[in-house]
Image (cartoon, rainbow, N blue to C red):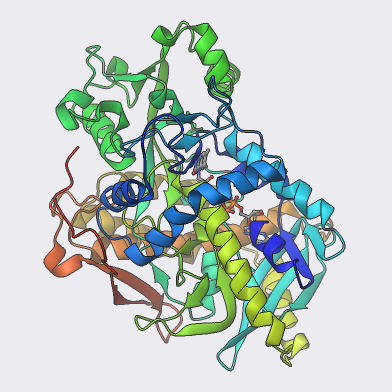
Amino acid sequence: MRAALEVSKELDVAILTKVYPSRSHSGAAQGGIAASLANSEDDSWEEHMFDTCKGGDYLNDQDAVEEYVKSASRVIYELEHMGCVFSRDKDGKIAQRAFGGHSKPRACYSADRTGHAILHALHEQLLKNAKSIKIYNEWYMHSLIVEEGRCKGVVVSDIRTGEVEVMQAKAVIFCTGGYGRVFKITSNAFAGTADGVIAAYRAGIPLQDTEFVQFHPSGLWRQGILFSEAARGEGGTLLNSKGERFMEQYAPSRMELAPRDIVARAEQSEIDEGRGIDGKDYIHLDLTHLGEARIMERLPQIRQLGIDFIGVDCVNEKLPIQPTAHYSMGGIPTDMFGQVVIDDKGTPLTGFFAAGECACVSVHGANRLGTNSLLEAVVFGERSGRSALEFAREAELQPLNEKHQKTKTLNLFEEIYQRDGTESYNDIRNEMKEVMMSQCGVFRDEKRLKDCISKIKSLQTRYKKGKITDKGNLFNTELYEIIELGNMLKMGEIIATGALNRKESRGGHFRKDFPERDDTNFLKHSLLSEADDGEGIQINYKDVTITRYKPAKREY
Ligand SMILES: Cc1cc2nc3c(=O)[nH]c(=O)nc-3n(C[C@H](O)[C@H](O)[C@H](O)COP(=O)(O)OP(=O)(O)OC[C@H]3O[C@@H](n4cnc5c(N)ncnc54)[C@H](O)[C@@H]3O)c2cc1C
């Protein structure tokens, strides 16, 4: 939406989304959006940049990080002027709280509904600019049209009617979000199924750093629903079955507010070593000492989530939590202007842009700090929008064979309708989630990853032998879920293949058989692309841009 606003300053733009715009996963973001406003303590963009690079285990491209953190304060004020209501301190300034890996309180927030506030402010702006912005709600993007080395549009369908259409465009911007739904325990909304990144991959664009998946430390046990890090930012503690604040062993200086990868591994280690609560696979998040008044002021949604989903009121009781797949650091490679690039030399794919979680700029490197992602979506939304506008201003619509493009998607529908197999898509989905979680999760090693890849491949074979029950056109959600499952099966294979290849531990990627970071061999981005046969995965590399902060040992 931020990208569309930028384009709409001069040109017409269509927004297409498979949900309603304000139901995008951004609306679930709770804790905050980072900026070095220095409203409660001295702060600077340099410190924000340093924390981001250290948090990302030095895989971040620092030229992009610098531009990004420098823009942060401006975009916060812009959002505010658009009508986004931020919580205030006693002097009436935008309040800022502590967050994992940030050395200063830098998270601007709207209680614990920050994403909701931002999303609605942006949506209002879209409606205000309705003359030049048309929104296609509940339309599904199937594929990206790339011919003669340039992007010409997308193939889409109207979920309501199943009608397939080609949307020609001078420029296309993907903001299709993450792919946490590949994993069993995830905080991500149902729409996070990798459609955008897989459409790019299928169009010949390599995917960057997809082995780096962030597991958030505080997912609701068994369900994965998020209890924001804001809970720890406000003083919440983590306890094992012995009642110990175990973070003392793992990150004595930052404790519960160490970066997420470190806290998630600490939790998983406690669970694996038998110190989960009641010997089970969860530990406790304790907020009881904060008191009802503070919880109601700062964390009302978290309280309600606990009450609604498990009947636990965090004012009086501890919340059961476990690591949950949360954020995709990797994605479609772009330069710092949001232009998609297709190789290690930064060759652009003309007419194609990407921003937000589906993109890999890479400002987060191997691990994203909390509150840095909403900032990414807004900053790079704006930047990609501006790049697309500058490009489209001079560009011509390209001729394309509409019938040919449509036929590919119609054939896919037909193939799914015709499959008369015995396999259940639900079983395949559940088994995929299970294996990704257990074999490609917080801790990885060669054996687990090889198991994972071979299991995913066998699921891909079984997928071709499934059977659909609804063959109608109207709101056929079963059809769309099957297509999404196909995307996720490919995504799972790509994540695990990248993880197997990266024989080191860095940020969110931890190999038990290679527990150290290896800058000599792996201080580089990975690029995974479709092999010529359309099945295999090819791996290349790209240099990391290091400007201000040389890689150092990461201790907290
Ligand atoms: C529970 C939760 C809490 C979070 N809290 C924070 C936080 O406090 N601070 C922070 O900085 N970050 C947070 N994050 C991360 C952050 O919210 C996301 O990374 C960010 O909002 C992603 O924004 P986006 O615009 O890239 O994608 P999204 O908001 O996920 O939007 C993706 C859009 O793409 C559309 N789409 C996808 N595929 C298709 C298709 N095939 N056809 C049509 N449309 C499609 C979807 O319908 C949707 O509209 C949180 C994430 C979660 C899950």
